[in-house]
Image 1 (tube, one colour):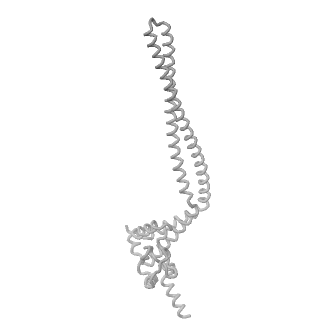
Image 2 (tube, one colour):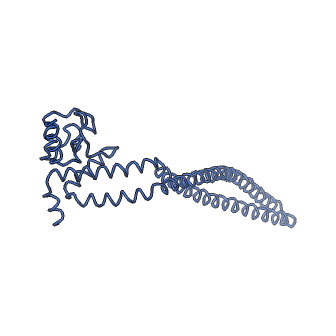
Image 3 (cartoon, one colour):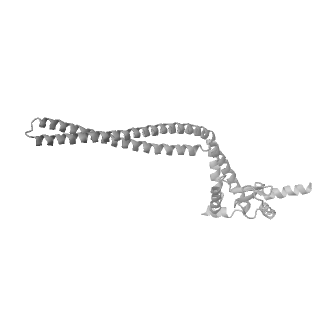
Length: 264
């Protein structure tokens, strides 16, 4: 809490310099991420796709097992029906009258109908199995392609990360130090602005009388106040924090330069 109060009581000039310094560091880190491009998102997206394909493949394999079980059940029904037909045929040889013979004949016919129906169901199920296998083969092939693509992108990302790792670590340490110099309320405001813009610019310099963020004209009176560094000023169009282009020079240095120019 003491650190927050101490930072809150810093002179406005120092607050502006600290904010500008933090912005410079964050912009450096943003540029490092740009070198990586869309690769991190692409790798993450491919990992998600591969996970979805794994779920799909597992489901298809389970459905295949269920269909194979159905085919086996119909096969057992056919064997049972064939066994009954064989038994009924034997019994027909020993019947005592036509009524018994006709009854056995009807039973044989019914069993043959059951066999025909079971064979039809087997064909239908086998067709479903073939379709499942085609879908499964397509999914497996697609997964293999995605895995290869992901590995290539990971290798590319690792190469880029290896080149920028030390520089990124350096600026991350700088960012941590910079953030410690700024009070919490100002940091919250800064972070919200950073998140609001795709280029991450929350603090911008006024160049040629225009905001460095939205390029809107900054009134002369506002420019004069920026030079005085007595308060934190936001762009009236984009809300970014405005700083003078000579923000890194102290007011004393600027007064000394002005005096030298007057003497010349």
